[in-house]
Every structure is written in structure tokens, then in C-alpha cells.
Length: 170
Length: 160
Image (cartoon, rainbow over all chains, first blue to last red; front, side, top):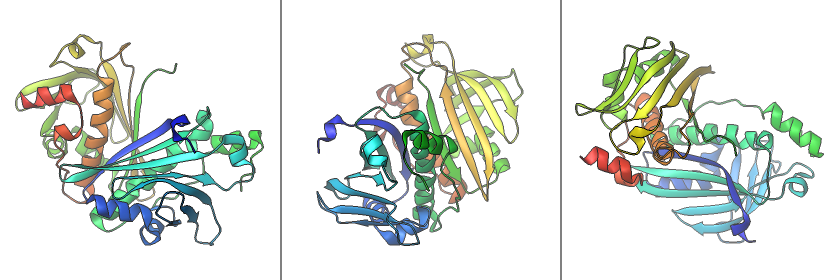
């Protein structure tokens, strides 16, 4: 896959008082992700070409993808495709990249969501709503030991835009 | 082309009242904003300033102050050219109770055409907002040196 074709659509940067290794572990382990990622368990086969899945507590596969870049504890790039019927056919693949850099007594974590074709703001609103919540909670978990309790529904504008495209959402 | 703007959303375990205090108190901002004090009486129409070690770095005017929900001011960097020649941009904080949390939405917008401050603004706010969240939740602000932000212009200003 040629990641040069992907253009960033959403970037979220957050500084966390933790080591790069701790942030890497929080991003890649189910034990951590269940706490900050709306109860979802991530599973990575951490090598280029390895599988990536996200399972909600009911055990279904909500998101799946593949590891595209893997340089622990600095950079992790994955395809990140929500498993709603026809979504990938209509929108193409979604690319998510995490960059972890030391910054003083903290690390800078930069999440970049990219797409290989133009995507409407309505559809992008899902990620733009979700990433700040997920990464705010990840930061709280690493700094205080406790994640945030954030309940969130997908944005109506996104669901309507997907429906118009013929993507079946739950 | 859409107009450039910078939006940053953060979820913080605190109350709107404490967050308002953290955004508007000179003593509190020094803790998480590189020792910078915000200075204003927060009345609509009153001046707003950021002051570091006795030097005013940025100025503006209070546009809205609806404690503890909404705070807005104009923003003009004055320490270095060409930024000081730009017309003011606008900063707005919206504080919303979100369960036991507060959702803080920062919007920095209405930049001058070809603004030279957007790059620094976009790199600076995430560090400031992250440190604010840490100081409210864990009691310890972050210590992030300027050279970690890659804002050349700011580095010169703050090292001066």
C-alpha cells in the first residue's frame, strides 16, 4: 500500500507525562485500551503486515486493519477500517498514525488520520469527536491511574452522511 | 479554501468553575503556561494581556465572559514582527459539563490573511492545554521546553 497517497484530515496532539514506552504500551495493549477506548480491546500483531483488530466488550470485530509502519516506541501506522458494510468500498481505507516524541518531562503523542480521497466533514466528524475523548482519557489513565468516564454516541451528521452513501450503520 | 482556524477539544476531570479559574487567574496560568500570566478584569471590553517576566507578549480585548461557560478575547502577538503588524485574531473557550467531566473546546480563528502566527499557535495550544489538564487532574503541570515545540519565533521571544 502506498501511504504517500494519503492526506491528513484530522490531527490531534497531546502531551503526556509518561515515557515513550508507557505510551506505546497503552496504545497497543488491550488491558489499557479497554480502560480509555470506550471499552474496546485492541489487538496488534506488531510487525509490518501484521493484523490489527478492535473488539468491543461483546467480542465482535468493530475495526480491523493492518500494521503499515512499526517502530517501537516512536511510530505506529495502521489501516483502521470500521467494519460497517460497504464502508471501505465507499470511503476507501482509513490510515491512522501515532507518533511519540520526547518533549521535556513529557512525550508528545500525535495522532494523524489520513485518507486517500476527499472525505466530507460530516463523515470526518466521527473521528474529530472521538479522538480527543480517547486520547484525553489515555492521558488521564497514564498520569493519574484512572481513565475518564466518557459516554459518546456517533455524531448524527456522520450517520446521516454514511446512510446517504449506502453504508449500513448499526 | 476554508478559513484557517485551530480547534482543540479536551476532556478534563474537573468542574467548570475550577476550569474557569484556571483559564482566567494570573497565578494559575503561570503554573501551566510557561510562567505566563493572563491579565484582565474579564469585563466585556476590558483589555486582555499575556505577561511573561514583566514583558507583555500578547494583547487583546475581552469579547465575552459568561462565567463559567464561555470566554472569548481578541489576540494579537506584539513582541515580534511581522506578527505584531497583523490584525488581531480571536480566541474562544467553551466549557461544557460532560457527565462528571468538563469538555473544553478552544477555537482560535479569524486570522489575518497569510497569518504568520498560525503555525506557532497550532503547536503551542496543544502543549498549553495538555499542561492545563495535567495541573487540574494530577496537580502537576508539564514541563515542556520550547525547543521541543519547533516554534522558532517563540523560542527567540521567550529566551530573550
